[in-house]
Length: 199
Image 1 (spheres, helix red, strand yellow):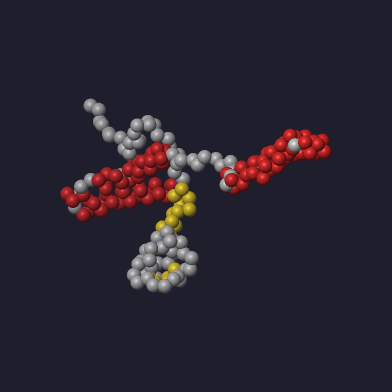
Image 2 (cartoon, helix red, strand yellow):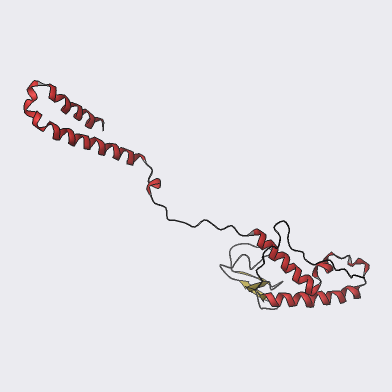
C-alpha cells in the first residue's frame, strides 16, 4: 500500500518536471489506475485484518426456550395431590405413626398402597429394567446405560460384569400426566385442601 501511494505521488509529481512532457498524456489514466490500486490495497488490508469468524454468516438459531419451571413445579404438586387424593400418601408419610400399633399401620399401608398404585398405573407405563428374579446370576453388558444399573461390590476392569441381581430396577416408557398451569403466579397449587365440616 505504501509503494502504491509512492507511485501515485511520483506520477502526480511528473506533471511538474519539464522533461516528462511525453508522459503527461498518460498521467490521468495512470493516476486513476494507481488510485484504484491504492483503494483495492486498502480494502484488502482491512479484509485481511478481520478474523474469518467475523466474516462467516451465522445461521439463524431460534432462542433457546427456557423450561417453564413454574408449570413444572405445579405439575409435580398436582401429581403429589393425586397420590394424596387416592392413597392418602402425604398423610401416611407426615403423620406420626409411632402412636399406632403395627396392625393399624399395616391396615393404613394397604390403603396407601392400593391408592398410590392406581395413580401410578393410570399415569405411567412402568416395567422392570431386568426381568430375572432377585438373586439371579446376571451379566451387565458392554455399553450398558449408567442410569439403568447401580454396580455395588468390588468393581474392577471394564464391562461386561457378572454379578447377582439385588433389585430389578424400574423404568417408564410412557408418562401421561396432565398439563397444568399455575392458577396463581405467587404460589403453587394446594396438595390437599383443608376439609371443614360446617355446622
